[in-house]
Image 1: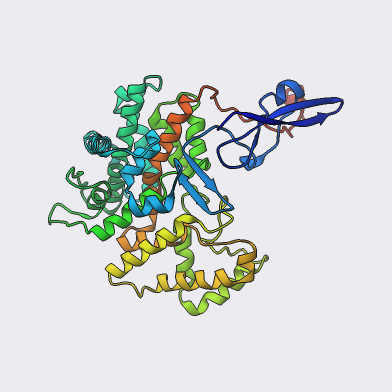
Image 2 (image 1 turned 135 degrees about the vertical axis):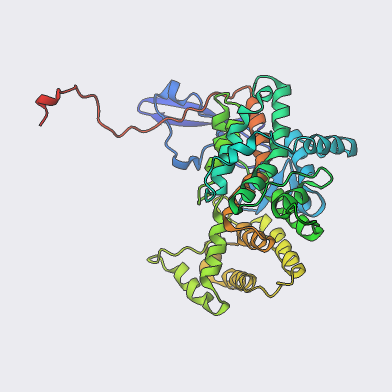
Length: 433
């Protein structure tokens, strides 16, 4: 944020008038700097969900919800999805600029050389029940990385921060793939350093030692796009969780595990699974009008998942890209006439012409098609959120590193409006009624 002062906002509390500087960012709404509010006014602001609160300065990701734009370090997501790939975007998010060829080669080499996990971690997986949710396993294993990699937990050491960052980006596909393999009773598959990032993940998930496995470039590209489109998304719940955990100087692995735990919530990372389940509930194209009516009925608890977004009040710019990938994957697999895809396309067409959806600006979001792709690739719905966590890890790390470098950063300490009892005196149990 550019801290250049443009004007002041005034607030009158009783007989006291307070002035607060209004500062501008390079884009987005102006910000009223209220850091002196409690000191000078002895009051707090009240903002459940932080919907009107900027908790930090950031240079990483910008969302224009009204305009339907998503920028990574200034680059439109559509351009990156078309011309770039996930590891190049990882470099961009971490270091601020697109790499030249030598920088990208060096970065990809460093990531590739850290893809294996400590062999002792195999025993950690075997401590989980076979029917444990993969997200529970991923969350636990990422948190346990600090017990295996003691040489990269000091957040005050720039070199250790860098090593931890590379390790997490490199190992999270291995960790997620091992969670999947463990859940279906198949042997763990080691990473292949001759594969690209997305292809390596697919082969760790779907190959078996008994026979050769060839990764198809169409499927690998679709997987890479899913990673890229979910890499970062400004100050959402899980990112804010990572920053809050990091503000206490917790080790990096613990901070990312905290983000994974938050992402697990169905209102956050589980949306694509919920969307796919909704499409399956609809079942056939002819039932769409019934569900449209239900979505419009305020007395009906049914929610049409995959439409609308907390931030976007226009079309989610990621949705068109993911829709193209869905077409490519299903056409390649010979399931272009897939009933779920037909329902999705017809539902999108009807909803975009329906006055209720248009008025409320309920446009399809990225979750609307991503679940279809993941199912087509062969993933069970339980793996959707771990894949989201895999994708978002680089964004969390970039935000965590930025937070640590911010000179005005303090340990997170939200305040409250207290509604409980005021002071009471203790009464002995014999005297209580």
